[in-house]
Image (cartoon, rainbow, N blue to C red):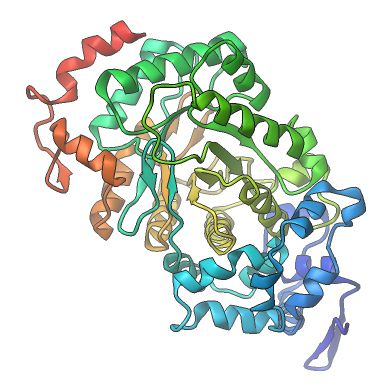
Length: 468
């Protein structure tokens, strides 16, 4: 396989696909930190030019990370749908990009071949696309999932209410959750990142959220984003687990650094499904997994194998796909400027992650976020939020005032989500929208101006305190 080209008399030679992929990637501080980024824009353009001519079959035949030493590589090959792959196998990366962008290629066609797309192929296509291209393809694909409600349908834009508290105070968590509900947020999940990693606290949070949901008959799901082993221990003690959460990465070593493995994820999925059968809850579907990913996690764990962070992110998405998740989101910008330095890199990564997730068939959301020492601000977050809304992102985060006081990072607020919904004519999940109308939070298709009346949740806040 020829991995070389000449640009205006200058010869560029790439030793293997791993180097080619890294050099073709858009500029990221993480790749520069790893010493694998293109040394010049000319080299980046040369790499893109060579990558465009690489066949999809050759990418599958030459795994970037050896399957003999990495279970994610083995998972990718073992779960490949060869019939679906045969539909695109003879295309080059450049031709695959054109196929995705073609007006004749609709979302249904992309979803049909998704089981035949390995993560490296999706990553390769992303490297050849502009930001606008990433938005256009992402917008085509809808991925619908079901737990207590239905997420991802056309015309919907979900929000995770993230009512974190620095002391895990249950009353504070519940009041913050109700605050989000009053703004029409929370259809994706009411998800709490606990400040303390204890089984007792995880179980208490899950029980409190379950009582809140049951008290008001809210068609949404709850999650405590503790480590998977902590959640399963809480489940053993009788705590109600709607969604089982875990952060995942694109290599076996990086997942091990998170304290997880493919086997543990399978065990957890089975245990939650088994426990669900004993609960008196109406389930819209059997999807019980919630995953978070993010560019740079494998490098930060020292388990990147010399592979660029975009390709590793795509491999993390392949791990998620194997477990038929209800929710997936990239926490773009959360790790810090060592991996995504500024607004330009964060926006690019967010659009890449969403695009790759959709091409692989995932219900993709994004936590539009940044740390306070990155070269970004709330205008940066606004820009990415609106681009993702245009791209048909399944959901984003709802954090009070955009400022997570427990995790100490900046995200998107309830008000931000409302603005995006209004700009693009989006609505919450259908069951959730009906509930908002019944409770007087919505009048028709928008927030009621007065949400304090007899049907309004605000009049019932005293009960929330009692629930805690």
